[in-house]
Image 1 (cartoon, rainbow, N blue to C red):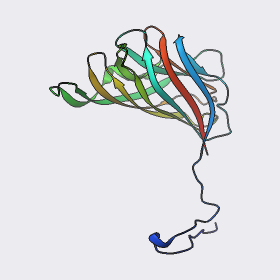
Image 2 (image 1 turned 90 degrees about the vertical axis):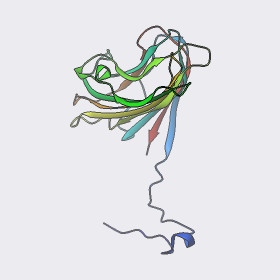
Image 3 (image 1 turned 180 degrees about the horizontal axis):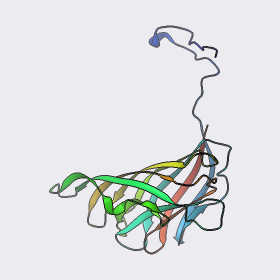
Image 4 (image 1 turned 45 degrees about the vertical axis):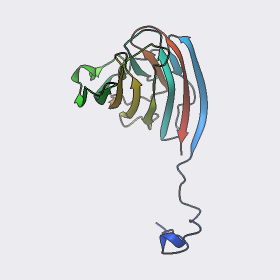
Length: 200
């Protein structure tokens, strides 16, 4: 394996990097805008082109108060029901500053479940309430390994809390995952922007 070097050994004096250093560039593949949508699904563009895909979800607003924001996967069939195992924890603080904490939430976990995985909890449907964040899916076209994913979401809770949610897990399938679907646990996605990126 060849070694690549910058043009100067002092970090402050480096003016150029070798051409073969990867930039980790993100390519926008598609954008979807929710408008009283039951689900938002990406069913094309997730293939072997990239080893990582990201979905940025921006100001996603539920029609129903205190709804959970969820994700599920399609693994070659027509249904979004891939078997998953996940873990979920969050930090939180209310607007009055009287209730704060960090907690692991077993009720939001899946253990070999086919239902949707919770990415954020109890999002309010007030006019100024929503959830935003980034979802990562790794090597979805592998037919050898399970499909790992992580998510971080910040939401305005229906009880006036700031909730920062961390989720990790895997779709326990060796078939390629070729679709990702977002929804609320109850009611429609009233509004929001979803952007699918491939990461090189």
